[in-house]
Image (cartoon, rainbow over the protein chains, first blue to last red):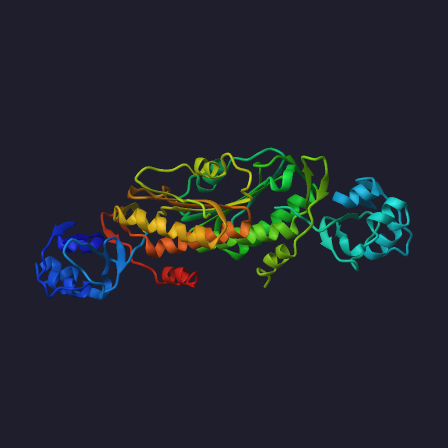
Length: 83
Length: 83
Length: 152
Length: 152
């Protein structure tokens, strides 16, 4: 599973991209957030307030209950501010 | 008093501009329309349906009860269609 | 102080890129620039469009409409250019440009300007057709309705 | 058939005049062209704005938003260009252009596109200040509200 980070989420995690293999119990975005938060202090800081973080699965915005599977591209980032 | 005509009002009257000296009883736009309509068959045709004709006095849109005086610039034209 | 609008009534074409650049030139407080460009369509065999106007009153009416926009919205600038004379299908007719620190002010004032201009600026369109016929364009009730939504 | 939008995500500047001309080129059915140009402001000592985006998803999101506009309004064409990377005060950031036979469709769809883009396209702005500080721009509730008025 490829995980991407953008903006301050990327800065806090300390990397823009990583390949991860979460355990079987991680079945949705919320589960993945919980599991990723345990990987490093940077991850923990990035996900400290999950309400501030948005997600996309395979390049579509996704809610916390959206399923994630091996092979997915999952991204985490703050609310968008383009335009 | 200078009277200007635009668009099909101009075409029906047959002139773009004329100097007129209406009698004293002509005190407002509606009175002027009635008086002008009697000047020629072209004028009569232009003002046959006064609801189709708009007016301006001294370059501001004016209603039929707007006063007109010697020295004014009065214009008659169809509803505008610019833009 | 409200911005001073730029108003031009001309037979010549205009340059959208140059007018856009002019509203930004030398300043860094413009966050959004909205524009509307009206173009001559070739509907139903239209060969040409002749735009008649009322010199003097036209400039006066456009200035008043633009000043009203500058008073209602916090604009940094505003440009209205309207052509007259004979135009061919594809030719630009009118350009409304509004600049502001914020997008909503730019977008709303641009829509306001074109809606008001359609009902308050003394222009008349005559359509000439390939077959030789011609007719004066009639005013549309929907244009009055569009302008009325800005009344207050 | 709805028009096919033109979508570009690029570091380079764009040319408003050329993009406007491109939506008209070779056709005479365009009666109105609305545009919104977003520009980098120099608020509060801003020295530069760095725009980060999500390559791949960005193009996908912009295409989806533009296709939605082409489905909702009778557009003859639509262009969305969004820059990324480091921008200076006065630099253009985003261009939305919509063309239609009728002005209301062009104006409404242009406002729709910029409102939706602000909440649905994966861009993030980082402001850098003359003093050396920097901060990520926070999303605004008013942008969500602006986008929400197009929900149906």
